[in-house]
Structures are given as C-alpha cells and as structure tokens.
Amino acid sequence: MQVAAGAAIPIPETIQAVIAARLDTLPAERKALLHDAAVVGTVFWVGALAFMSGLDERVVEEGLQMVARKELLRPVRTSSVKGEAEYSFRHLLIRDVAYQQIPRAARVRKHRTAAAWIERLAGERVTDHADILAHHYGQALQLAKAAGLDDDTHELEAQVRRYLIMAGDRALEFDARKAEAFYRQALKLSPPLHPERARLLGKTAEAALVGGR
Image (cartoon, rainbow, N blue to C red; front, side):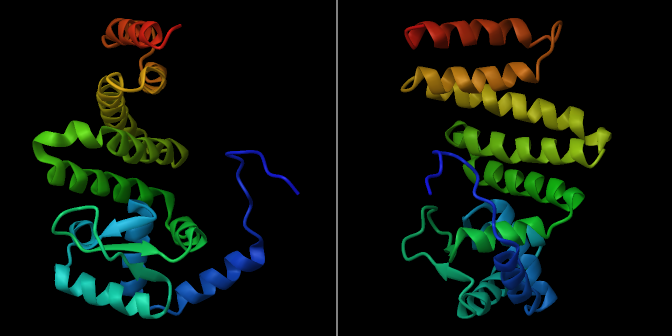
C-alpha cells in the first residue's frame, strides 16, 4: 500500500484506545502536564510547561521524569533551547492522543499561553520564531471559531496576521516562495477594505517577483 506524501494516516481506534488507557493511569497532575506538552509540540521544555501550568520548574521536572519512566516521554540529551531541559514524546501517536483529549476551549487557552512563553523567551529576537508563533495563534484561532468563541477571534486574527507577515518578511531573504505562502495566508485574514490588505498585496507581489513568477 502506498500513501501520498503529506497524506493523513488515520490512527486505528484500538491503538488510540490503548494509548488513552495508558494516559488515564497517570495521576491527574501528570496527565495535565502531558496535555500542556502536547500543545507545545512533539518536543517541549520544562520552562514552557512551568509557564503554562503555573507550577515550579522542579515540580514539572519531577513530573516529567515520572512520566518518562512509564515510557511515554524521553529526555533530549542536548536541548535546542539554551538553559532549558528538553523532552520529546516517545511516539507521535502519544502526542496526538494526548492533544485530542483536551477540550477545544482549553486548547485555545493553552496555545495562547504557549505562544506567550515563546514571545517572552524570544524577546527582541521574536522574528526568528514568527512562524512558530503564527502556528500557535493560528491553531487557537481555528479552535476558537470551532468552539464558537467569537470574543476571541478578532484578537487572534490580528496576532496570526502579524506573525504571518513577520514570518514572510524573514523568509523573503532565503525562500521567496515560502514568503509568498505566508503572505497569502495573511491575506485570507485581510478581507477587502482591511487596512493591511493593500500592503500585503504589495508584499505578495514582491515575493512572487523575487520567486520568478
């Protein structure tokens, strides 16, 4: 059997059930850490989970070590973030099941909090992480719309647009087609007469020109 590149592979319900049952054996506070970790991504950091949960970093570290002993997570020897202990899920399916267990409204809040941690960590170098921030705010926006949280969508749209433009500006230096893709995503959030639309159309045209189109 062949699967097209980028195609989604459905998880058999039996595998989902087995993983979910393993997660349900965890104490509530450990399972909550796993949910926060699933929002951050397949790899995550102690500082991020401490920020999201409000717990002390030592408490988070102890919790992750316990979950790692159950072979759900593993510590990463060399962290990609200086001064932050890094962990990863042992398998992508564990992360996916943990993520699916989180109610939509809670996912909105968690994605926003994860983005806030990245913004704080990045400081003046936030442009370097614009694509990741666009992802988290974008996920929060999609979930807010699906959950009918209309009060959140306007602010989230502004954040997604901001970081998509920032990511496009950064990508333009080395990958014009990628920059154009970011700009086009931002255009979808900028309907006719939106004050950002004219500037975005110009940026999209520039990226297309640089990319040979």
